[in-house]
Image 1 (cartoon, one colour):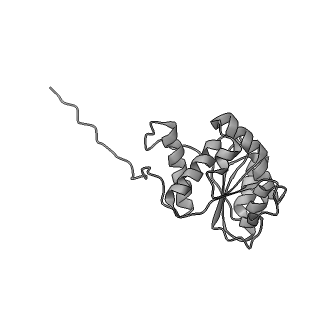
Image 2 (cartoon, rainbow, N blue to C red):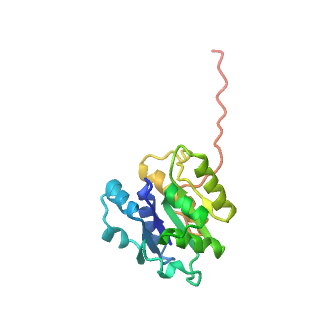
Image 3 (cartoon, one colour):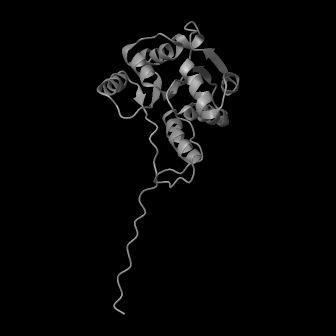
Length: 194
């Protein structure tokens, strides 16, 4: 399952759906919050139809009777990309007031993999406590923090590298991005006396 909530970073959800499709190994189920659709339009010029076409199945966020709202629905994992602080708070407190929060609650109660790509900075104490609550319940808080050791040249490389780490957590082959191979240490040449 992929959910896109109303935090900045809608590209993470869209690109994740594309990468999951490229693996050819999973069926994707999608739900997007109202604010998520606003961000998709603002940040990527994408509308509902275009985004929902990236998934195998899409559900309205208010459809709390959807298949993914039940523990009997067999699903390996759920990623909320990006995850707003409102969605984080709903998951942390068990407030299943929309399909994103309900599906996340199901993942936790069924002891299945839940990854929240939390997007906010700086963090308040409430944010940190909510992250702790979700972690204690078995969820994974995965802020999309870029790394630079692979020397990315483009924004797309940074996004794909972050999502490769998410794919690793899902047990799927990562996108074509380099893995950390250790530091390359070079010894400076000794000064010459000439």
